[in-house]
Image 1 (cartoon, rainbow, N blue to C red):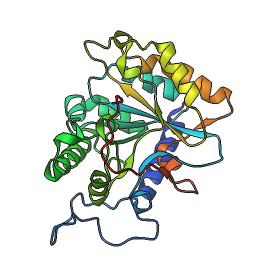
Image 2: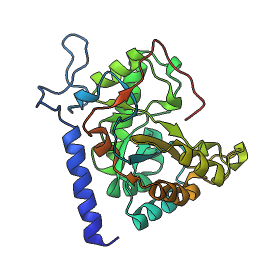
Image 3: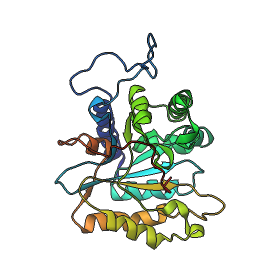
Image 4: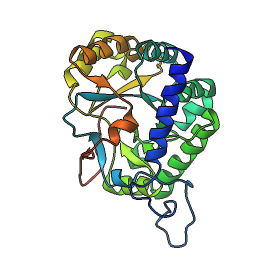
Length: 276
């Protein structure tokens, strides 16, 4: 992709992000903590039409999908992912933990320079281990860390660690100015070859999940047990599968704003999943 094309994509992404940062009807003041007399929490306005939901799929008849990556460990796979996205002219959204942004500021800045970045908490805790004050701290510290590392505002999206949500936690995150954006399916690439998931396994899982409005979750980084990052190596086959079926990868912010709203999952308590 040429430099003018990259600049055009960046302007397009920023326009989509700016649209998401404001309520659809103009809204009022910045979202405030529900406690009486509390001042602005993040100093931002959130996408109010996306609130009150655990968003996992955007209902649309159009053959479009969004690619997302979580980053909570190291920067393994980031260069390969950015190169592939750039060469294929494909957008993605990256959900960063605050600790990742602090430990890998150059990587976080590189991701934000070409794609959307959003919050995946500060320290990647289990939801059951947090009270209201703890969740608020996770959201606010992550926001500060991501802004500090990238020099830009993250998207008003929050993805809970481990896919664990609850109505009360979603409501609190919404009050802080963030929509809860989860995922339709996960490649399970974070397990790595050390955990029994090969590059081919991850790509096949993604291909089977393709449907209109899908939000695919993948991961960057690696651990001592996972081995080298799998999803970065599976990405070319994932994009091939999407395009061979006549689908188009679009930016998550644009997908979330498509007519028809978003499909949510409502439930009565925290949900525990193996996905990270």
